[in-house]
Length: 351
Image (cartoon, rainbow, N blue to C red; front, top):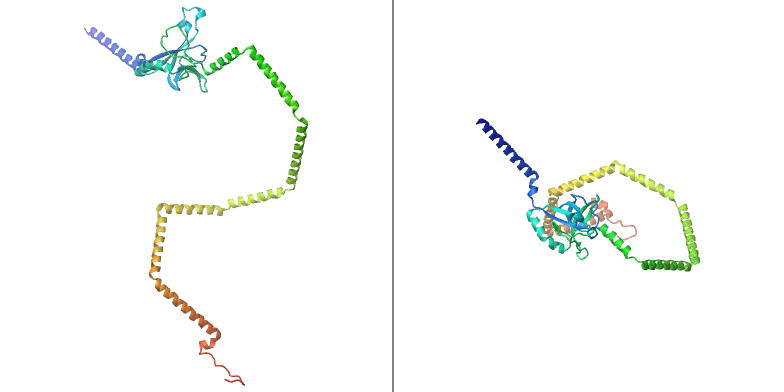
């Protein structure tokens, strides 16, 4: 009985461990197995060299998913088709990482998006040069879907040639369409152009052009000679010496401690004025000056009559002082001691 309980406990422990391990694996990544995805495939009739499994897929630059399979149509859909009738396309399958709602919406809208010009195209990723699959809207009439005779296993999205492939295809088409008649016409036109250029060269007035060029060179030589004479007679050394002296004086001025002290004092005054402005002291000073001016104006207005009388008295006093000064000049002794001296009667004159 005890042995049976031990087996029961051991079995329960093993079952619990297995359940816990399964739960941990599901939380770490097992949910992706049950996560709904949307897969589509596209076909290329040109090389997709550089595109690898796991290459990113972007819709107008936005990450959308990754490439999961790169196959050939011969191995996937054309196994029973004769070799001469096979399309020999490259089948590229893409898995889009999205939620269940987004996957259902994309699967529902992909047909309308294809009608509007949704195309898959291989492109290079910037400096690294890695190939990736780009989805974008292009001209649907210029890039029609490739023709095929099988039923796609996944939703089909048409493709468009890459830029480099399109350039190569256009060059090949141009060379293929170039006929012998076009080549002959091109050679004839080139010969005609050469003959016309040769005739124009012979018709040029070479003698006149040579004479004019000689005159131009002669004038240029005269100009250079005149410039040399001017430079030879110019007081360049004195000018350079004066410039050196001025530079030395400027250096001495800049090295003078008084200049640094002046700059420091200016900075201190500026800082003090800024502090007065920030503290509001300057505003209060201006207000006090304004109040004093108003009081002075009121005081002058109230005593205007007294000031006028005082000014008149000062004017009379100035006149009296002027008269006294004239008397002092004429009769200095009389002003100080008595009145003016008596007139002296000379002999032979009447008093």
